[in-house]
Image 1: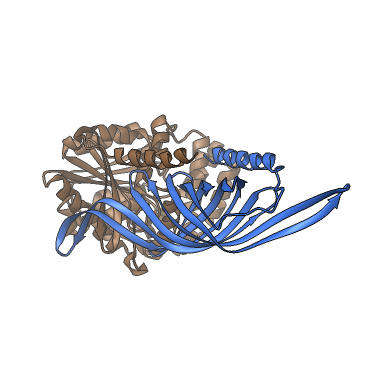
Image 2: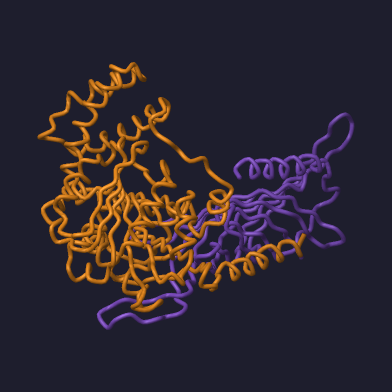
Length: 347
Length: 202
């Protein structure tokens, strides 16, 4: 009994030491970036010989980087490029002793700049950095990209279902709820459920959406994705054995990530609700790929449609996936990775 | 994972109940202090080890003498207050190693069936050790290598166990449910619950 009790942690220690793999074609390493009192992990997986790094900006706020490693799209991308999954300040396994005032979008964008420059130092200036932000990560990534000092270190920007303009998001979401519910009721799909959505959406004044209604929009958006999935409008990838392995051996402690993330979400919430970066999108002059789902009610494709016309880049593309909702990478992973690879190869 | 954990706990409790018929024939003479070693699992998935020493500074053994069906039954109940210095560590695979040192005030009750219940409160420090740390500040980026984050960590703990005395030597298994509370973790407090499955010996 005593031997087992000692052996178990020793085995864990050995396993922990083996977690790192420095083979450049199959790199596996965790590094930490300390900036402004926060120490944030960056989990590196994939082919570093490509000299191209995709830095993933996770959603939430309150999510974590490793959530984005699940799914076959990362398997394809990791074979070709080095993927960097970053835990933002106060989220995932990021730690430190900070004040609540440190939690602003500007500070998080500065953290992202610190991560970009640290990766450049770790791997070399010849490495190309491509940012990929999803949902809230789209807002944070846009806040980073509209700063010319930050943007100059980036080779490309991929925004997937990015929430870069909350007031516009709320307004277009309500319009989308109204139009889509009518369409679905007419087609006889989940009629009772869509009728409820229709009644709720009709009662909201799109010119005066409160914070409480904004939260409701988010909840209803995920709710309707369920109806659309049941009626066959959305595709979903079944979890694989690789996903199970990622979940079981993830460096993220789920409880730590959940608790820290929820607190951070509350701290950033008020600023996010007011955030509108549409007027600054012209400052982006690096190649951009915008990916949206046709059935995304959380962040409607209207945001992508308006952004693509305002971005100054000459190399820019908007792709709307026909069988996707808010998680384009999970809904249509093959298409997603194909678009990302085509974009990166075009740089 | 939850099912395996519940099965494990129920097996532990069942085995204790099955063996609980063995009672003390005479007043137990517990040693003043004993060691303990445990598997320490932060929420059950991050493995580690916990070492401690339980030192009793207050002890009260109650004797109950009853007669049932013309048979005299003597029951002994022990209550102890103990000081428990502890040291341990656990790993978050692929991210960090945590080391903790703390001191707990523990109440222990041992009944006539050699079944123990413990409850304790304490405080200490927890250090998170991180590898491959880079610091970004006004002076630029510097590679720190290893960095240590220190947190004040009060703790609460409850547990059950079984204790035996053979030829004056003490031993027995125990299961504790504990939670450390890390101050200030980011902007707040982070609970770090853990299970401890261990062995007491002298």
